[in-house]
Image (cartoon, rainbow, N blue to C red; front, side, top):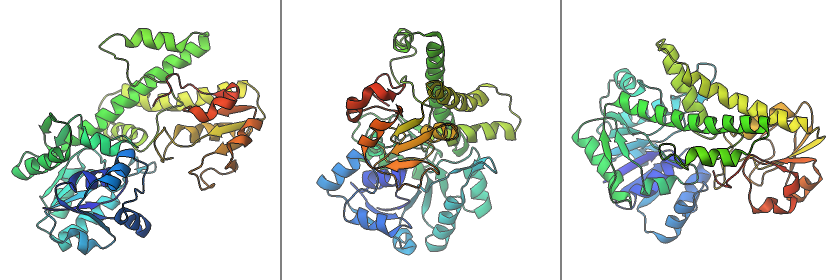
Length: 388
């Protein structure tokens, strides 16, 4: 069947590649350069598996900037456009989703619309009423940046926000494209599926915050963080995973999803304390890191990479930005980020040479790699396990 994908970011492109193994897929994007790259089988995002599939697999995939070409004749239209958190309204900005829905209803009203963008709890049912269009359901994604196609090939679960034949067909399309043999399929209502997405990411943010606050305590008391973490995590109920301290959680999902969930609680005056604390804890961690740096009394601080984690090309909501903003009034900042344009942070010096960081008094690195080995004596990091 023909499937249209609106948006070619991590979610959209990984879905397009996955589904184009067995279906005709047309990916729509507003950026001509990205469309051209996809059609030339060059990945516009950093993702090892997408690059590999582009080089080795025969995919029935075409990208376009033409809405009609994408939507006409499509049985499913998958919306994977960005929904950034709006700090003014305290909600996701969902205008890009509504724009796609409007276009699909005009061009191909018989299509089934599948929302994979992250949205507020209750959004899908509300938007179905607003557009008077019932053929919409939500399918949350649980993809890591830089590993989006891998996570699509080996999903932990597939959750679909509708209990219907067309929902089962779409779930099977995802399962048929995957490599993992046994994948749990869960069919819920839309609002429950939306809640699963936000609560899952907020739990992950809570886990990051827990180990960061453990690290705060260990540093303050002069204790060995690694020994404490390993002693704690050997309990099978806790597990030796997702426990590496950082400068705070960041990226596409966790910062905005935790704030959106908190907004949903506040909207209906639902009692809570923990969700508030998860959001606040991330701010406290960044403040703690900045203070530790300033206690060293440096005149110049180098910053090694703005990306949130290894294997990603995303700067969005990276914790390092807030730490730099806290440091800027007191020290000179030199940033090394090969993927930066040089205008990501105001009033700092960007360098395209790692060698220039050697002249800094201290080098801030959220995650370390082999490039830092020659200057490791100047590096300040909380990366214990050299992993994300």
